[in-house]
Amino acid sequence: MARKFKTMDGNNAAAYVSYAFTEVAGIYPITPSSPMADNVDQWAAQGRKNIFGTTVNVIEMQSEAGAAGTVHGSLAAGALTTTYTASQGLLFMVEAVYNASGLGLPIVMTVANRAIGAPINIWNDHSDSMSQRDSGWIQLFAETNQEAVDLHIQAFRIAEELSLPVMVCMDGFVLTHAFERMD
Image 1 (cartoon, one colour):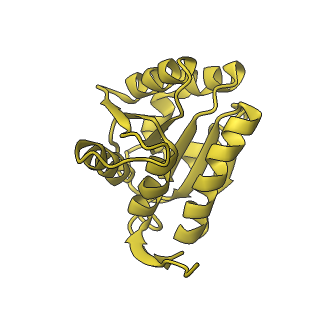
Image 2 (tube, one colour; image 1 turned 45 degrees about the vertical axis):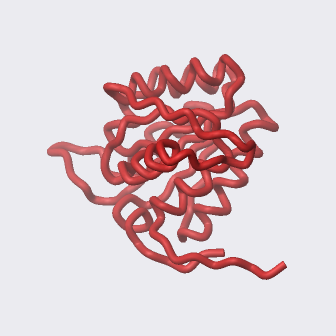
Image 3 (tube, one colour; image 1 turned 90 degrees about the vertical axis):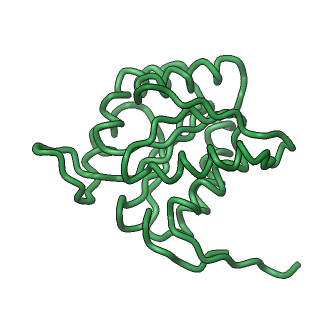
């Protein structure tokens, strides 16, 4: 079979793959991950099907904590679930992050890494995901957008197989907004 290549930015690439493997997406857009949630919401509204032949049920909440609660509820009901976040948004989810690993919930969360600091800044660093390194989540870090695509595919399989939550981390405003040709 001939290989298929597409050129897209990291946000689109991550959303493209996660949409395929997801049944429910709990979203609350936060920069630089907002385009991921936006893409997933648009595709669901257009009736786009995932690999299971269904349209992803997208639930937009009033906060990151609400998105985390949605993710917990849908996983408890047995649905494959994802969410997208960055920086302070991840900090709003801290209680849920620890609970997810303790409960063995197979969440896949894409983190568009952005600095945590005062005053709020948009610089890229990994202080957001590193603040959660002891939470019990598996953390996968992408160096390129191709790696982000590949890691998302692996993340869903790992989460399901091990009943553990997985973060796929990618550089915010660097990979999320950079266009690359990908397989």
